[in-house]
Length: 393
Image 1 (cartoon, rainbow, N blue to C red):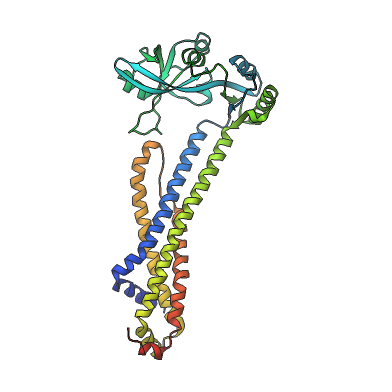
Image 2: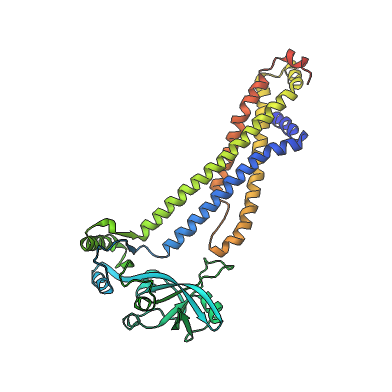
């Protein structure tokens, strides 16, 4: 009985190909929205989590919003670093400066920092060295540049020992950063690192007061103790916990996962609404179909078809429209994600079809086919065979 009802439902769908396709279109768009948006959000979440994880689980970031007239200096960081639970500390500040070489000039994000920064933040060099303690002490005009600064401003990649000008001050290139796989091949990353003291000396926009620094704990087990020590030290220094914040890499990861999780739910909800609209379209066209086939229903009932058989046929027809639309939507989603992945690979984003969201789309479409097909199927099964045979469409 079910097989026969399925054959009849399929025949009814194929007999009105254009109408069936237009009805499926709502489901196709809804499924595509759900699968593509959720898969992209999931890929972005994984990428962000991987980038945060690359910093390690022993990093703490400190930001100072108000020093209450008692600012931190580099000597204070040395005092903090002496704690047994802390293995490294680095002040960091950032500004934008104009980098020049011959006739080429570009705006570069310049970070002023100290010797431990590369170890704490896992900065990798392709060649050369990073900032040393002696560079900070001597206010040395040395610089570590990104690959894009080397190729676009200097003119070639292997430019160790060459000089570059930042706002009129000449710097010697001692290191070149490893190319960032997450950066786009179509846009350049212009960044550079110089000693913290040098940036203070050469830039009027940078204060001698330390407003942010990063810390690495002695090991993962020392994270809580290191964070507690920093909190105690800064509270005693400034007298108010609102003047500063201490954030661990784990907390950053949890915050990002929470934000991206909410984003995924929001996008999934929007896509779900699209599917509901598609379901209303199915119910609308099924009601039209029931009206058009009133005499057919009357004939089938007259020769012995019971209410259950009639209801099953129209319910299966609704499910066929919904599930075929779902299958097409999943197929188009796979193609869309493949195309998106080609462009997203430059940003270190992995957009793949998630089987979890595929099954959600299938179950959602199945539910929509049943829920929105139930009323038309019930209406068809309730028709009086005598009145149905008299109906003239």
